[in-house]
Image (cartoon, rainbow, N blue to C red):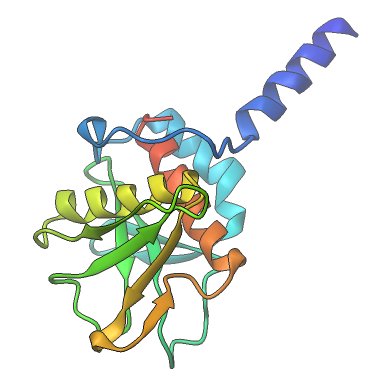
Length: 181
């Protein structure tokens, strides 16, 4: 009975999503381990919509809670697994009229009144991952995130808490897949 309790407890701990840990950008990688991918496919994949591109060897995962209506602004992340190369990528998805180049997201700490900006510097996968990681870290710090679309008034980066949580969970799954968590 004691063994069953510890096995159950270990299983629950492995499935939990701790939201308080920041990610160190210096440790970012695109390589994943097979055991982490198996865990993702068995335990986490049910929360994602899957698109398979067999010719390229890609599996594209989009969290089920991300915005489906693309007629207006959205900010989402897709997890792309290249199983032929054992690589995983977190790819930012934006509406066609919004360019990734020079994209800026602003943040503000509600309690501290600190504020700043996160800029996407370059269009490489590494730069995009660093940008997404900065956003993730500000979510962990519970900062407000917003942006100015075409110099109009500021709008929230995520339409609602479900969208924000879908982003956070997707990035957390990416970090777990690549061995950072």
